[in-house]
Image (tube, rainbow, N blue to C red):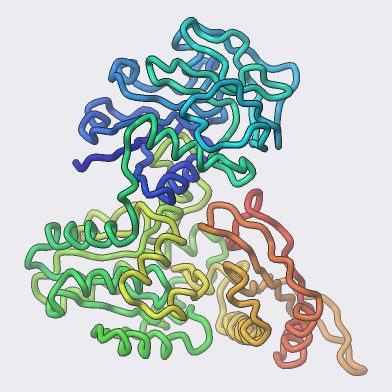
Length: 512
């Protein structure tokens, strides 16, 4: 097990992954593990520091999340954030109570010491609070190093033990200098170097692929999206061409002209590509299926079946490569901590027992924005790297309810018009993701002198960094108007276009 400079213990905060991202952006590699991680595994990673994340629970709850008691005797620097602060306070003899005034939102941090943890930071700068419980009495040996209007113990520390605790969340965007705080902990308190970047990550993963695969063959599932393309490029870099079998399954759920675009892209990359036309097979398993989870599972199972069939045409295929991302893993199953499952992803959760492939998932621990940087590091064209995310189940989860050929046609054509207008106006590169959704809701309309009773299409555009959170994009009304007018005028069967102004959370980016 490799050394991990900073280890983040996840207690269920929606912000935990941001801690990892902020540290990585500072050049310090870190990993997130469950709060209940075995102490032997923690020791094996040889961390220089530990960060205890926030979380939704109370330290006084009957089933309160607690790390291994041995964690406190490792002698490592520790930073506690929100729930992590309350754990530290309680563990060392302080007192935690439910606050009379819950503190949510922006606050001003007053720095009361010259601790190295605040190096380069501005006094009275904005931080982000999100807590109910708070420290009422700090432990013996700790001192107050920062306060806010509602938190007399907004930041406390035992400098001798190198333990720091903060009631606010330095990892979120609204904590203006939060990145500095995390970086100061890693560099000044823990002695970490800023040596991690996408170049070093690429070299490390390529070496891991070579060691894992050896002289066996890898079947790489390709969708044409950024993730699978980056995986294919990395495998192409790591292995001789005869060991890499890239398979593109045209499942009939792609956007307009996408199959041709994928094939042309792989020619450009000089990576051999096998295309399998499986449209009829996928439509058959989706027939009459309306539940989104069932659609995802049916598509995932069919993908596995098609890949297995293709693999049997080749000898010595022992591995299946996928473009699984950290975001997929987090949303599918709580593998890192007590976070809630949001939805399953067709490429997460392992393979069925009857399948003998071993998985190769080089992107499993990084976010979408990091994947784009990795793609550029590997020499992929910028226009490919800049493509909007596209889900593995394709247009099946952009069709509410059952999937039909007619519905897929409406989605493809409306999506193509929207993409065309976004590129023409320069907004394609200004939004993180944009697509149309067929609601399978019909409404009355008027075209000419005739009454219509046709479909409604929703346009969804969001701004994000990594897909963990997102806000709806503020697109000029004239651009939206042109998209709407063209969709209604040019596509038979649609008479109404709506715009989704929901953010994530509470909504997800995709509708299903």
